[in-house]
Length: 66
Image (tube, rainbow, N blue to C red; front, side, top):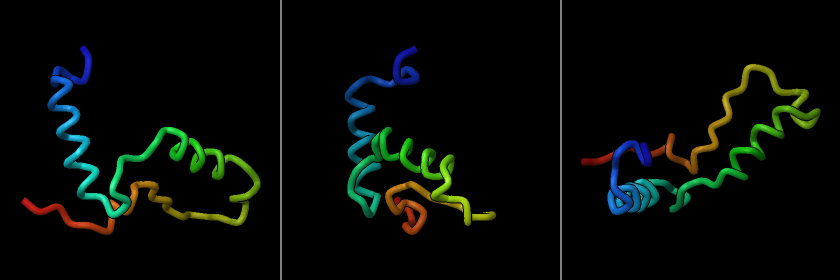
């Protein structure tokens, strides 16, 4: 099932709405998520313990309004 049964128009509307709610003003890219995972996998993160990394374009700092 493509796009969980939603039309391309519905998906594009969701992406636009979701992007407008983020401080970054856009959706994240796959490469950006991969960069976070690679950072955690390599020695660059060897001094990190028990940290939460939020790669969400600032979404966690915002509140959704109706």
